Image (cartoon, rainbow, N blue to C red; front, top):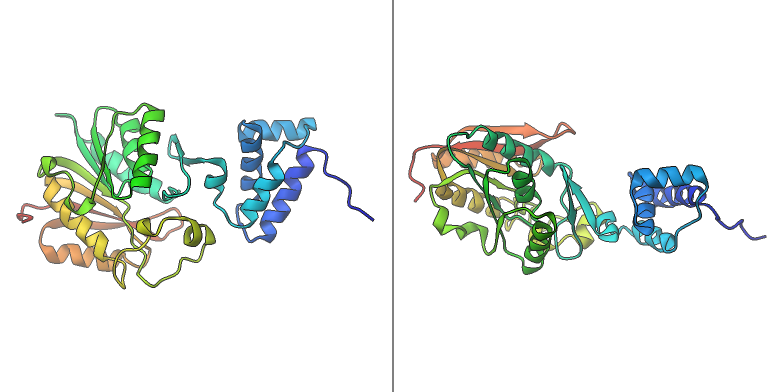
Length: 293
């Protein structure tokens, strides 16, 4: 006895949800609809309409679902990742921006909106796909926005996103720990989502472990804080006194990161912020008046 062939989009999406759920994917319904939208070249809302109308199964959907069940990131399969108001192009070689990082961008954007006497200057260290830098420029158009990325592949994705979105952002290829010598003591907000996973640790999610570039993941030490602290030190050089620093970190690193910044004497008003899951996620600090060099 053979199983009845799937002939409608509604049945295909239903079966895709079951397949992805069996593969351990918590967002199975969202992903199934997103894959159908990608196969059809349309939107998720249009897919839901077509499901009701009894539309046929699009070519290639089965292959996309099979790849997703193997834990290939959804964003690699669709080629796109949403971030705040933007849709970014992503794929192999660049870190896929996460929903949690929207909080990082939001804190930077709020700080920049408070600067009215002159055009604000923002720097994104470890910009990856350009997500934070581009979101800042999108939501604070008057700001002068700069970003830097060490990986040539990720930098190329960032340039593509900038050009596709038509946003005027200075995106440089280079090392965040010595970037922007032309902007020292002239920046109003430095924001960063640096690599911070401890060396030797293995990410639980296969999408991260097997597909995100190691350069974007590992923080260079057994506690994962070497690179974040080097980025913070560079930020202290770039920022004006009284300016804002915003950095993402792992949920267990906030206390240690805050203590390390406080010990330098360069920072004040150090605070940690929880993400929407109630986990410590983002550190903010104000640049004090102590010289950075």
